Amino acid sequence: MKIKKGDQVQIISGKDREKRGKVLRVFPKIMKVTVEKVNIIKKHVRPKKEGAKGQRVEIPAPMDVSNVMLICPKCGKMTRVGFKTENKNKFRICKKCGSEIA
Image (cartoon, rainbow, N blue to C red; front, side):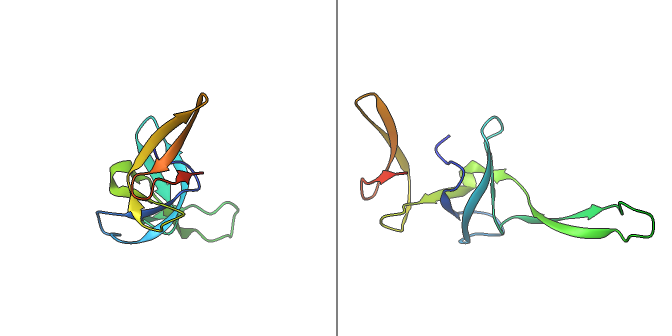
């Protein structure tokens, strides 16, 4: 998977199109990512103690990795991700400017 936790991404399709956010969690087996403040769902939570009130909590739901695109930290544009190997070290590169992505 070319997207990692902590990457800055932009949504390219769906109801949150053109929003940007940081990747909170990555699910490589099902090819999904969770992005902060994007794809928000409301979850109903039962009261924990007697006399307490239940509530609705808004949480970001996972979305398919094909709906997000990485934003290069150097050039600030949406880009595809490439890989480069030097001295047995493999790292990601920006396909637009060619810089290394941490």
